[in-house]
Image (tube, rainbow, N blue to C red; front, side, top):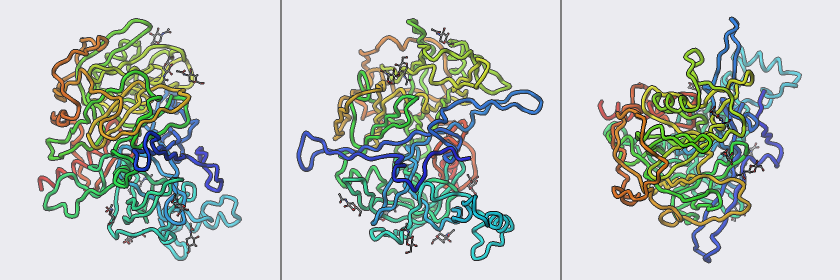
Length: 547
Ligand SMILES: *[C@@H]1O[C@H](CO)[C@@H](O)[C@H](O)[C@H]1NC(C)=O
Ligand SMILES: *[C@@H]1O[C@H](CO)[C@@H](O)[C@H](O)[C@H]1NC(C)=O
Ligand SMILES: *[C@@H]1O[C@H](CO)[C@@H](O)[C@H](O)[C@H]1NC(C)=O
Ligand SMILES: *[C@@H]1O[C@H](CO)[C@@H](O)[C@H](O)[C@H]1NC(C)=O
Ligand SMILES: *[C@@H]1O[C@H](CO)[C@@H](O)[C@H](O)[C@H]1NC(C)=O
Ligand SMILES: *[C@@H]1O[C@H](CO)[C@@H](O)[C@H](O)[C@H]1NC(C)=O
Ligand SMILES: *[C@@H]1O[C@H](CO)[C@@H](O)[C@H](O)[C@H]1NC(C)=O
Ligand SMILES: *[C@@H]1O[C@H](CO)[C@@H](O)[C@H](O)[C@H]1NC(C)=O
């Protein structure tokens, strides 16, 4: 059964709506911003993801009576509805900061079921099924792979849009969850209410086994057209202006930057603000740190993903605060991952301080379920400022017995992924032009907006006072230090933008072996401990470097 509540026929199904607004401090060519609201959905796949499906541990009883827990597919999906072309066609896509291409399915995708395939009540349903199963469908052999109800999220037929223009170039992408899409690049108009954005590069997939298209808004270095490094073997590798860059090029926003507000754990929707910061959505100060380029030593000149440096972790229980470590480590901010993945030695320190124990049988940490108003916080330091995160948001109820699972998964290497359970606590501004992240503690329940456009540096943000760019991934996590004393007098730092080259440590963890030559980027974690897709991407770059 499909839990996902979208039904295409109804106009009220809006899974995301758009707000376009001009900055009111100026007139005609004033700085502006663009806001999308999106629905937050959780689950093992987009098909079965639901708003109601809050992250939880699934407990399975095996035949021998033992229990097994499955947390492997806790993904986060953010869906927005787009109107593409002239006249406009409605298509629901996933908003994704972990990839950089916008694509939609065409109606002739052979994976799309025909109406008769979908109609369970059809008197000829049995006939369709048997024909499909035997692979002898008349007309098209493609019937046998028809597994997706494409009408659910919509398809885009470029031949019906008078403004569509094909680039006649091939598109191909595959994601961490195993889905892929291939087709042809083109450009068309996105209709965003009061505003139309023309010449948006959109790939139309005539073959994809993903139920839903993707609006990748990540860094240009992750575009599927680009291989990262130019070599004689990688011909036709290039970057193009993806959606956020087009917004800037067309003057709709002034800088390729956006703010992501995931809202609190119980909220069904969040919002993304292109080109602006909403000061009402955070408390305290916005601090800026650089985005790391973990692949510099591999010949990649600019960052590909949103990695930052964590400079320490502590725990606050009641009014007692204790620092667990001040070891530095790179961490990927990934809104497509629900859980948090940390180096094993760090999860041990955290578990020890909150009374969680590792079960090698289950493969997870478990603990007595804290009450819903338990005020314990896990505090992450990013260089002179902290983001406090509620323990209760990392807790996955196993449904019974008063025992809960901790949504912090130990990693065998020293890499970290801060997913949704962390990110809901932070208001995060992604500056894709200056390669910087600004963060502050998120504030919920704001009654009115206080939006300011980003024209150069992020308004209201200041460089993190204790940011240090020196670390090594080979450093192991050690206990000690103090993250709760504000180190405002640190002298070793300069302004954020000059620190772009930080994080030059060799990455031993994310570029290891894989032999596929497919360009593959990350839509979500696909349940893997590390984004395997990046393995594939970088191994293909590496193999092109060394062959
Ligand atoms: C596109 O055009 C075809 C034929 O011209 C028509 O059958 C189809 O319904 C149209 N699709 C949409 C979404 O308008
Ligand atoms: C999609 O196709 C790829 C490649 O054939 C396959 O590995 C993957 O399992 C498929 N995924 C789904 C959801 O069908
Ligand atoms: C945007 O495009 C749509 C569809 O072509 C059109 O109906 C609408 O008037 C346009 N809006 C603006 C503001 O130009
Ligand atoms: C998709 O389009 C390409 C390019 O036109 C073509 O080579 C390919 O056969 C098409 N695939 C399907 C499944 O229709
Ligand atoms: C498609 O063509 C347009 C117009 O030439 C160009 O601006 C855009 O970068 C191209 N997109 C891709 C993905 O190649
Ligand atoms: C964390 O807990 C505090 C106090 O209980 C609460 O006000 C806040 O909304 C919680 N934050 C999240 C993201 O759940
Ligand atoms: C909150 O949970 C932690 C971890 O289980 C526990 O140590 C602490 O006593 C709890 N706090 C309260 C007020 O119950
Ligand atoms: C926000 O609103 C919700 C529901 O109205 C409430 O439970 C929560 O305590 C509020 N949070 C804050 C920080 O005021």
